[in-house]
Length: 219
Ligand SMILES: N[C@@H](CCC(=O)N[C@@H](CS)C(=O)NCC(=O)O)C(=O)O
Image (tube, rainbow, N blue to C red; front, side, top):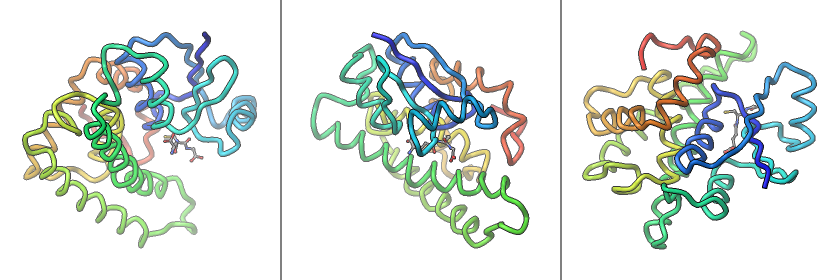
């Protein structure tokens, strides 16, 4: 069985998948993708015409979309961290919270980050204000949701925490989580203390200078 993860250390969706792989001790080769390198770009386009990372290549076949990759890892390479709980109700909650982090944390965070990469004449202040407001709204919702929960979907680490770790990591840099949301801030700190994620954050440190909004001097 050959597994190759096409990814970049700074990419939030790549960190999400890497976390699931590392939690389960799955062996794979890492292929660092530089979007500016024409050879890498062509290789990525051949694997996935949408040219998004991560892409996991298993015996030559591309698997795309971070949540689907993690679902596949959970089934095909089970390890110590069950990413999708066996209980169906718990599994649905894990999938629900995974969607929450991708759609309502990662997406608005990326909208603000991408704004910083746009030429001045293509800026979208209305879209950015909406994204920041969405982050504020989901922070409040998450802080209430985390009442009595150690992890996103309950008291065990799941797929949802793989999505939460990079999304909250970068969202807090983009639109700081207010101090009043103590549960959400504590949850972000727990994610950062998780050894597999701490390693991922460390591996991305050399690339922090490329975070378009400027990385704060913390974490
Ligand atoms: N829905 C995809 C999103 C992947 C994604 O947006 N990846 C970013 C890096 S974090 C990317 O490849 N961006 C390149 C682009 O937007 O052209 C997933 O869950 O894997």
